Each structure stands twice: as structure tokens, then as C-alpha cells.
Image (cartoon, rainbow, N blue to C red; front, side):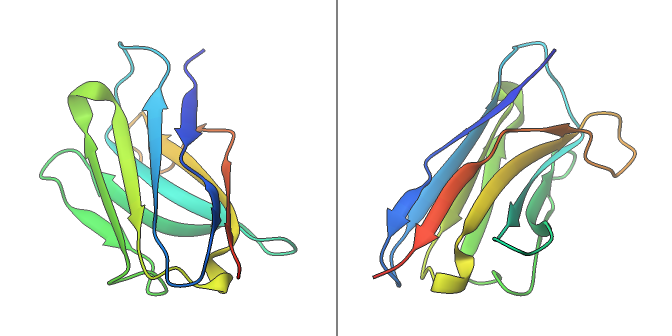
Length: 119
């Protein structure tokens, strides 16, 4: 079974930056889109950003627009999330996900990586 593996989380001060990476465990993996979601303690999981491989269009949650940038390499089944100007409210477990069947739903998920923004 294909796995998505996230990396790059950690502790950062407010105003700092982090870059998250996500890669599929198998070279044969393919998807129509990949995205990032996050879940803070006591809150529901929420959408952060997504990239569609056909055309390269991207979407962002309003709360991260102008601060976060999603990018990726379809051929390498890899997606990144560059996070700048981090705020304490960005603290959460960040999950990578993929739309494998083109149904605009995310059906394959990673295990998550913790991002903590604190002084």
C-alpha cells in the first residue's frame, strides 16, 4: 500500500519559517492533486493548500494566503509547503494528502508532522 511520508516539521518562533515535504513511498504512485491539511488540538482537521498537477493550479485557505506556498514535482510524487511568517495559531499536526482517483476527494493520507510555533 502506498504511503505518503511527511517531513520538515518542528519548533519555530513566531515570524519564522519552515518547509514541509511529502513524498510517496512508491515510484509508481500517481495522483491528480496533492494537498496539505492541518489539525490543531481540540479542533477539526482543516484544509491548508492544494496543487492540481494538470495546469499547476493552486488553492489556499484564507488564513494562510500570502504566507504559505505549495509546490511540487508530479514526476517525483513530491509536494512541498513553504510556510513563512508563522503564527502561534499555525501550530498543528500537518498532513499530506493525495487525490488518486480524480474525484476531488483526498483518499490517501500521510501520518502527519508536528509544527509548533512558540517563543
